[in-house]
Image 1 (cartoon, helix red, strand yellow):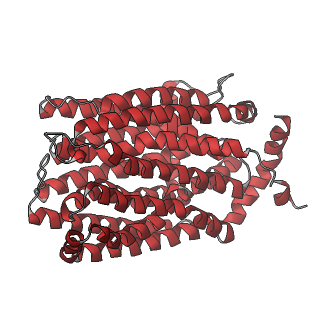
Image 2 (cartoon, rainbow, N blue to C red; image 1 turned 135 degrees about the vertical axis):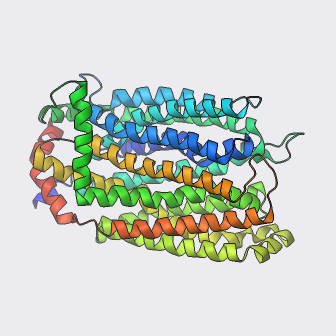
Image 3 (tube, rainbow, N blue to C red; image 1 turned 120 degrees about the vertical axis):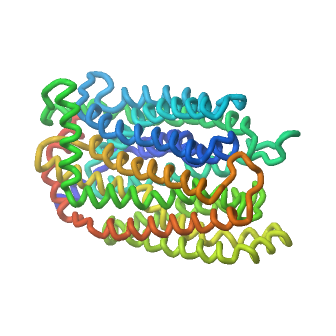
Length: 493
């Protein structure tokens, strides 16, 4: 039996794999509800101008981005005798985000705009801090819990399915909470709907993330022993803070890390545009009802899930990079189809007026885009895992959480830019916040904004991802050289 074959022994049980996925689902229900609805909620529902709301969101996102690599460095260098390097932060993050989630959406309607801005800014900063405490160590745990090349990819794709479910379920379930009132005819514009939904997502996160915490806790002793063999960072807080930025500079010098991090950030700009602007597009550009809009968006998210086995098969047969490139090309096709749909807006709206079931003609563009976008929810993190394995072999340091934090930093910096750009664009096209109607020019502009933003982001991401050069044989060789020590610890645990 060859050396690679001997490494095929599983290091996680199916229940633990499910736990990692369900933990991502619990986190994603809260995080993706915020990402998907906060601009629409603040701007359209609460009447905060797009530029002001975009500024509040982007500040929170930038803070989130900055704290990710810092938390990664702290987690990598933690040596807690009971919780290990990851689980203490996961627990603190869970408690904080489920509480902050409820307060974020409960902004009093009577507040003036400046007070609403302060409310949103404060609770988004708080939420983003707890998001970081939970997600960065959790991502690192999912990368270091296995030492097999294909199993590591499989874990990330499995987690990606649940992350996408965390995008899909808010879209599907929110409609059940968006109830109209005597004063508000459209449930999407009812502020209490979002408060009630926050109760649901917080409760679900408590159950799902607690299960993940408990089921993976058995790995703490093994991972703690592995950590003892690594170089310990010396110095106090100041030296540690400086080292974080040195590590980031070093990471950016690595062309493979740079290709994944920047390519991921740019590509996810497209997803931000579809989600943030899409609700306005299907509310105003196309004459869809509440249920019709959610059917269309559900098609997007369902295809991201359906495509995950495809990306696993392609990455196994060829390589992760090739799967990533194919996904980007499919996303580009979906974007072009969105452009055709916007161009045919008038006949599509006429069809919708005649037959509500005609909404089916609007689903293919988003379904194709969703199929391609799905690759972004798993393989970039798996590629970062490959980069960290090679780095560990070279330097004897485990920077798994640090590098995954840097990846998140790059992504969230891109999201912050996206929110600013989208907020400014909404003001430039003279979108009226808080209004249940928009001018014809605004309706058309919303559609072209979604098409243009998505297309440019996907093309740029495709070009950047193509510069990644790390090959599977080299990563497997690194895993082999590290494998003896890893297997020894597995057998002891």
